[in-house]
Length: 616
Ligand SMILES: Nc1ncnc2c1ncn2[C@@H]1O[C@H](COP(=O)(O)OP(=O)(O)O)[C@@H](O)[C@H]1O
Ligand SMILES: [Mg+2]
Picture 1 (cartoon, protein in one colour):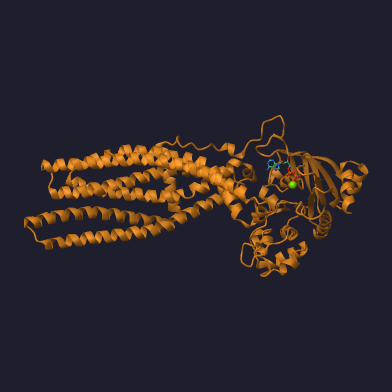
Picture 2 (cartoon, protein in one colour; picture 1 turned 120 degrees about the vertical axis):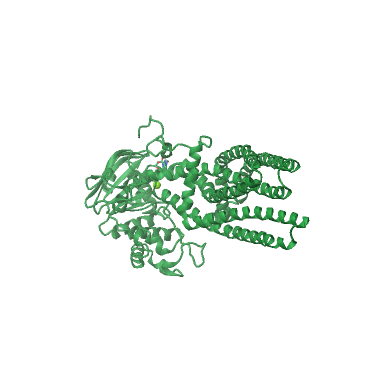
């Protein structure tokens, strides 16, 4: 695969087919709805059941309301004819009042209940999303499609189960309510019912078509929304504030933000108009049904098929039933459109099938040596190898240096040795055991790596160091010892809350550190990890060469028998290493001790003299 004549190495997302909104069969729709229900059920059984209870209660109340209406009209007519007193109306009025009160109470309790339930569902989904992002191979983070889908899910699919929760409950409530009303109407005039139900069919079809447009909109809206949200965080964050001001870039960035935002809003406007056209068609068709059934009622009264009292109750019943049917169709529409997002979510969650094993818990052995044999590596989606045919050796307790220009493959090699990637060709072995026979997680336990762009967690100093040994991140004594080794103890002790100080200015009592201090903290994190191999990938690049030299010299002293791989683009800072490898365009071009390389008189000798002349 490292062969240059071949096409780009495949994207890890290739194995996952893309969503298509239209390919959804009714069977699939039912399955997805079931999946969404299960999500809600698993998020909170109690919440789900309570919400169902409120829906059923609401439905029963509606049916009682219609019955009470019928009784009221009957009693009124009887009173008018003199066959009953007005006093007979009292129980009916009490019933109506009670039903209304219970109904209103149920609605407001239900609103709060669903608020909590929605939040629980969203938390459950986030947990599963984070499981995926935490466990998939690093390669996925090289894939734009991975992020595209992740952002789409963040923007849409996370709230969808919340919507589906309401929709499914609305559906249940709608069904229960409609069933109650249908029974009541059947007792009054059976013929009205099929008319009302059949009339719902066109509405259903319209709703289905409208909801299909929604996923297409989400797909096209995600890129501008991502750009807009990114620029919002840039324009409102602390990190960018000084550079944005220094370059007076605010206006230019704002313009970009506004452009992205209006692209999104234009799309939204179109989508809203589209949905409004569908909504209009739906409203027209259900008004026609209502008018038709009222006409039918008038006809039944005129032919004395039903009494005026029955007709009155039927009017209420029809009105309520058509409202319930609308609710039902609305819920079905939401389910249609959300189901597509649930599929999107399922696809993303299925990425966990390519999750990495968690390791056996015991670190890879490293007593004698790590050997790279003819290792090549090509990034996914890339056409050329970043590392080619590299062979090298790191012995126990040795300090090995890797030098080379920017882009020569140093970081890539560090990632390979740290088992973040597997070589596309060649092999890496620890004490003679090929890493393909070990779990990457185990190999990583044996490595403490600090990259050039190491993390500056907006957490306490203690956590920033403790995360080097995540299982015992809050062991303050160990963190202090590591900080002392890394030369970070003095300035950390001086912080307002000591090691509990958050290392960010964005928090009360938080403090930011200088670049050099951050590097010491990162170093402390590496030292905190009890690993036989420490890799320092230019964490000192922001220091001047003299300081880098001094720090590398320090590191050698502090290793206590651990092996180290020191990486630098400066030839003048690593002369004390046991062995130096010179990397050019992904290949090792020279290797040996400083003296050997100087005698060789190649690129290393030339660049060393050039760079050292300025500083040493
Ligand atoms: N994530 C990536 N995806 C594709 N190509 C990459 C990626 N990271 C680095 N590269 C490419 O690999 C080569 C080596 O990069 P790198 O290992 O970062 O070099 P160095 O650390 O020596 O500066 C460069 O050509 C770079 O463009
Ligand atoms: Mg690098």
